[in-house]
Image 1 (cartoon, rainbow, N blue to C red):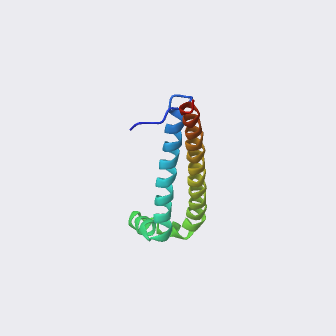
Image 2 (tube, one colour):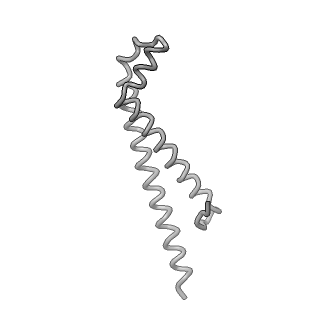
Image 3 (spheres, rainbow, N blue to C red):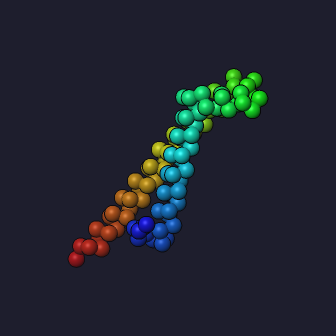
Amino acid sequence: MITPPTFDGGRHYERSQTLLRASLIGTVVVALCCFTPVLVVLFGAVGLAALTGYLDYVLLPALAIFIGLTVYALWRKKQHDACCDTSSEKKSQP
C-alpha cells in the first residue's frame, strides 16, 4: 500500500486509517448486536439470559460512541487528505 508523503513519514496517515477501521468495525459489531438477536441467543446459550434486559443500557451508548468515533475518524482523514493535497499542489507549481 502506497501512502502519501506527510511531514511525519506517513505515521499520521496510518493512525487515521487504523482509527477509521477500528471505529467502523466497532460500529458494525455493536449495530449487529443491537438490531439482531445475536447477543440474546448467545447470552441464553451461556446461561446469562437474565442479563438480556440490561443490554439496551450498554449497547445503545456503545453504538452512539462508535458512531461518534467513526465521524471523528472520517473528519481526521478528510483533514489529512486536504493537508496533503494542498502541499502537493504547492510543490508542483513553479
